[in-house]
Image (cartoon, rainbow, N blue to C red; front, side):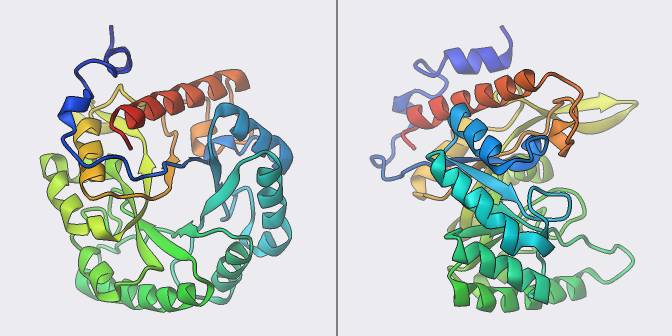
Length: 309
């Protein structure tokens, strides 16, 4: 039995036993969306919405960025089609994924259009550090852009959220973005917390960073990973939920403790014939992709139920 099977079959037993969660009663209404990058091979809004609904998701975390389901320059025309199709299928588009980093003209159009379509959250782009320049001056530049975005977001009552993506991106360690979040201190600007990247970047210290920024979390991304040694180098490898090293038990305890009631989006980054990278022509059977996606969703739902989230 592999780790994934062990986790799945132990839900009612010891791995996530209710006795391990000595926490307040459930106060959350968990809504789970799917990051639509894995479904770029479904271009039609109605087909996408119907597929997502049949898989069992509550919503679509829709890509509105270059090479996304909706191109930013066509957002006014195309975004409403996806929102309407979602509603007709009994789901919603509660959040979008963008490449927004500042309140320029095109970004403002995307934000305004999203808000007009009752979308309450958008994920921002990533700010990559230039290692040839002073780090702190770059942090200050991002902070000023973020402050202006927060002001614009408030105008339309929509939350802009920065993901703590790993690598040389600002926010990877969370310690550089924490003071920015605290200074802006706006309900319309916060963090899309990614436990996967946090554990990869901080290791055993991930919980410290989580406690530092927990009050600024506006949405959370779910995915798993493991480490592999390849040609003498440590490599991060994406994998299905339950097959990796993310400490889901501890993570769910913290979500309960701090009563973090925010939208959830599942990301699929492990091998799915290219669909994991947004391919519109994946190289494996489409049913295989959907089966893998649903398997992760059902496992997550069982974990959340047992953790009373």
